[in-house]
Length: 231
Image 1: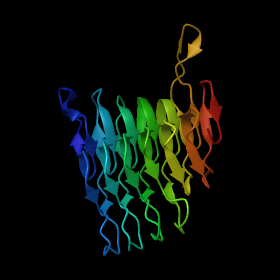
Image 2: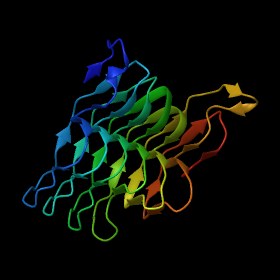
Image 3: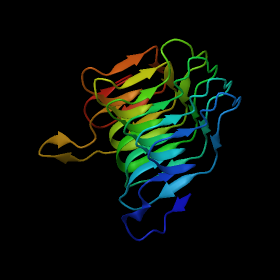
């Protein structure tokens, strides 16, 4: 998906398979044995939002929650959006809904492409922003975790798996991130770094969110403040 020559903000809602998912189900059939795959790269230069390797914006619904799947969904293309907000290797902005939340799926979802948003905010290897009510993974059954393995680069709220996780009912289970995470900003405003909140797994989280049985192994580098190996 190439929107690098767009001349206005209509480049918003860009995804390797789906730009805007309002509701419904995708790859969630009880007879599906192999998940869906998005293999193409996604790129846009403009100041836009909601850019993902599989889905740009997921407003609600069910994604890759098959009752019989042996393999989760995958997004393997690079995501390049230097001036965008809400950028993820799998989903740019997850407003609500669930991903790989089946109680029997034997392999979680995978985002393997590198994510680059050098001037962007809310940037994650798997999801840029997770909002209240969003769920990734399952607390009881997945035998191989949902994962983000590509490198991640962004300006603020940057994580190897999720850029920002917010909301008391927002949950991530059984997931990991292995890619190098880079905070790209070295500038300051009023004495404070604009490159804050860079983490190996999640860049920013508040209180009440749930992250269980998850880990990060990638190195984290940033000249900014509030930098952590996990969060």
